Image 1 (cartoon, rainbow, N blue to C red):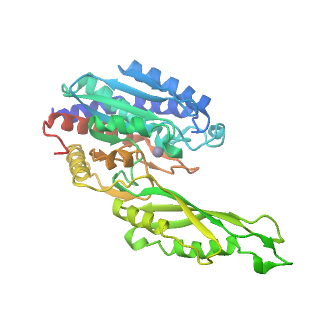
Image 2 (image 1 turned 90 degrees about the horizontal axis):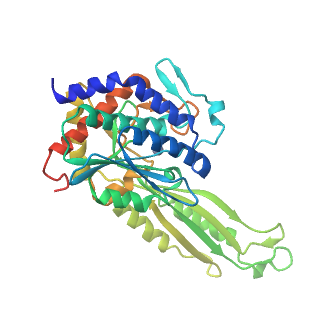
Image 3 (image 1 turned 45 degrees about the horizontal axis):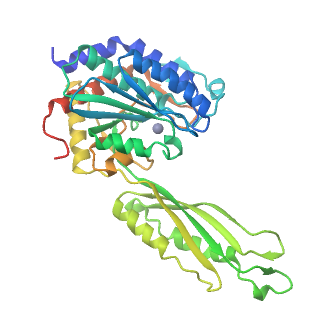
Length: 387
Ligand SMILES: [Zn+2]
């Protein structure tokens, strides 16, 4: 029997283990901002990782949940499986959207984004350790706790592990229908601050220079940077300014959300913000900020890794699509380092960050087989992917 078919049969036979693992992780609610809750989920996950043979290290963080690093097997090189176990849902959400299996779907907060993805990675690893061919790579998993708020406390660890890895497989949710993500926009924000001159709005308005009026001009300029045809989205998402009704405001602020498809577009937007000048010379405009996540561009490395995955999927009798998305993930960091990265290898389902969040139960085991097959292929290929 071809090795990929044995891996698939193993994963299918372990369907209930995969479901039970997913459900147990969803049962530990883990909103990013609640360290105690996230750490309870982390403790349960760490125990399960150790139970399948992982050597687990906790990367402790004072203000966020501790990240978990787990290593399997040995070998001179490594392949990184990456994802997060924080969710956007508050503790108590399980009562409002309970964990249920119905009509072939598993529903629950965080099941799609991305606790089922963690369970898929664990089953793929089990398949390789228990029945797979000998690997020349270590498998390293990094499960983080602050992806949903920008990965401030995990970025350095993600980048360190990525630099040591031949490839990074990201277990984030798939595109609708199961496609993987070979492009993600870079995302960031800018804070605009305008200083004006305060004055009594009734007695001597001529002495005032309104920061709010100036900000209105700047908002129109910023809005003109948007170029949806080129995939550049620029949106003023928050504004504030002014003190009270009879005072010409001397300060106003705005937050601008920015999405860009390439590093070149990011540089262009950055220069435009740096070049903003006041229309009313009595006011002063400053812009701070930039990209929080660089774009994941469909480089030759990314495309080659996708081709590997596609050929494994074909051996499983599936067609694996690819596509892009406006949302960022930690795969943006690893791809920007030039490390071959394939994102969206996690569960097939729908409703990330939405009340109808769910995964397709019967498609979970083959997803684990796809990941296991891809690791086998990468490990068998002695040529470095990035060459
Ligand atoms: Zn996610």
